Structure formats: structure tokens, C-alpha cells
Length: 350
Image (cartoon, rainbow, N blue to C red):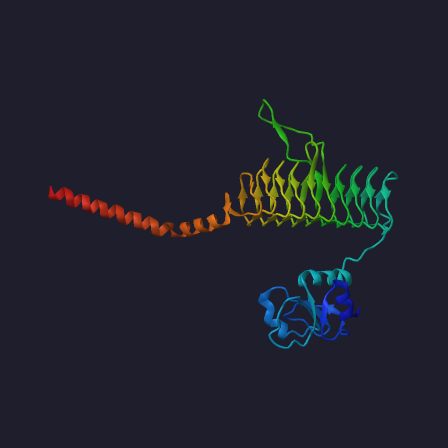
């Protein structure tokens, strides 16, 4: 594949400085790119590489001031990382659309399959399920009864979409994810055992959502568990029954949101975060990795860290105090010993 710098600039609506006819054949990291590569600079940590890179084209910030000459053709963009992602998706994405139905797939006669759909080996599509046009269903997926998948959505290998659950348009569901498995609902009985509570709700995933591999999004006991549009989940994230995750919220790996909790929009949740059930998390909340959230966060756009979590500034102050605890303990012991000495002196003088 050969692409001109001018074509790339047109795609991302960037401004060229240098040779508009520069040919690109592949991509590379700015620190070790080669001739014919396109790369980008977004992190100031790598700024020096801009002047030494062998890349033929570099996408940089629109307002970056060059300190010295650059041999590569420059394309300026307000968000260079995003611009580079557009290039990757258009020209270098290895997951190009497939089409056709593999002969080993088992598809119910009552299922509705849109135009241009790919259905891979050993996929099962049950009664009355719907798959929108352009969807890509990779091998060994199961689409349950009356489940629905939107247009241009991708299910990678081994995804299970349970009955009655809905996934919107332009979603990406990575391998091994289960959508609509039973919520964790059990009622204690008089003899000390637990009776299973039937989980009769579903899961609704809106448009432009991406989940990592091996995520679990549980169906609601009643009603729906909901991932709003633009949500991004990392690998192995658990969303429990009747939870709701707001628009464009991102959740890093190994985190869990317990039942009936409502997470606001535009939140950023780090890895290994645990959020208890039946609370609300305000819009724009940022939570550091390995934090535990035991109660609602009501004020928007705040930062929290720790377990139990506290506001970021308070947490940093607490960490300083914790580091000083051994020294404080020694000071207390020294003071106690001093007091004992003074008391002994006082008693001996009486």
C-alpha cells in the first residue's frame, strides 16, 4: 500500500508542511520509525525524537513550535493522537470487514440477518434474533433468542449474547465477553441455604460502546442493565445487574460495578476499582486505580483515590502522615520516657 501525505492530510483535515507527495507505506513509533513510515508526536516526553526520527511523515500538534529543522513532512492537527488513529483505522487496520456465512454456522430460520454481515465458523444464532447490516460475528459466538445486534458491530470470537439482550450500532465486543449472564441474586431461606432469584431483565448496550476481552455485563433482575453510548470497558470488567454506566465513561481492567449503582457520564475509573451497590457516581468523576468506593459521590468532576476512597488532595496528605507514622511513634515513646524520668525525679525529691 502506498499513500501520499496529501491524502492523509485530507483524511484528518490537517495542514501539511513539507513534501505533500511524500509516499507512506507503513507506520512506526517516532523513536524507531523508518523511511516510508508515518508516526505522530503527542507526548512531550518524545519531543526530541521529532528532530531525529527517520519517519517520512509525522503528525504533530497544530500549535507546536519547532525548535530546529525537521527532515520529515509535517502534518499539523489539533489532536495528533486522534489524527494518527484515523490513519490507522483507514489504511492499516488488520480487522478489515469480511462477509458471508460460514457453512458450519447454525442460524435459526426465524432470525433476521442484514446485508453484508459476516458470520464465522460455529456461530449459533437462535430464534428471532436480529443482526444488523455490516455486522461481523467471529467464530464460536452465540446470539440468544430475540437478541439484537446493530449495524457494523463486531463480536470477536467466543462472545455470548444472551436472550433478549440488545447491542447497538458500531460497537466492538472483544473475545470471551458475556452479555446477559444472570445477575448475582440469591435469597436466604429458613434452612440457611440460598434460593436463586430469577433474573428476568436484560442488558442494553447503546451505540459506539467497546468492551475488552472477558468482560461480564449481567442482566437485570427486572428492567435493564445499561451501558450508555460511547462507554469503553477494558478487559475483565464486571458490570452487575441493574447497574447503569453513563455516556463516554471509561473503566480500566479488573474493575467492578456492583448491582443497581449508577455511574455518571464522562467518568474515568482506573484499574482494580471496586464500587459498591445502590449508590450514584456523579458526572465527570475520576477514580484512581485500586480504589474502593463505599458511598455515593454527589459532586461532579472530582478526583478520588484510596480504599476507602477520599478526595485526591486529602489522600495525598494522608499518605504523607502514614509515611511519618514510625517517626511519630518514636517521638511519642521518647516523650513518654521523658515524662517517666521527670516523675521519678519529682518523686525522689519529695
